Length: 212
Image (cartoon, rainbow, N blue to C red; front, side):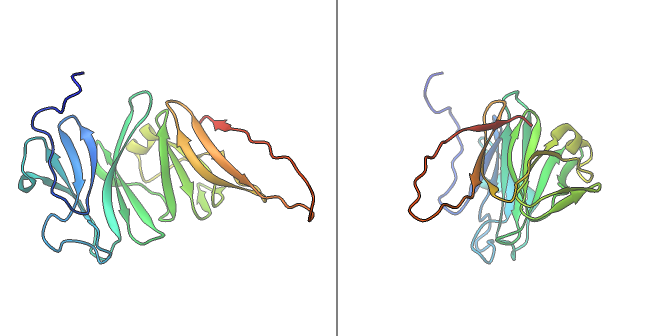
């Protein structure tokens, strides 16, 4: 590359906003498009597609939340094989959110519990962490577990999800973090233990790597 900015770059006025790069010449932008058009929490809730070289007035609305929401914004996941997920995250309250994915049929809400979090994308599978217990087709997934969803199946039928379990917490351990590489899932697990007063001990650290 030339290590230079390309001509006709995107320029956004200063403000509370977010942007996701959807394609070479397109951004999905959440911002205060009209003066005062913010949630009661003071954040954007309208997402529009902005083409390179176009003024803000030429952006096309793709999603609109509600003024009572916390916020809404776009996200893009790309895995190591080039699979791409484009979606909207609507944060309804501090603890609840909804996800809408771009599919061949248009923008469709993903049938996740509102207390569940998308944590990444690897090998064409979405990673989901349920914050509360979640039962799908008679199969229970505990709060704090980690599951994966085949994105091809999700795109075809986002209302009927078929999660695959990656990690389930035990009575003394909990999922603390999730990171994805090109083709692996790295999880950080916290383990609770107690020691007698004034006892001595050694701590051993290890990495735990899962494949979805």
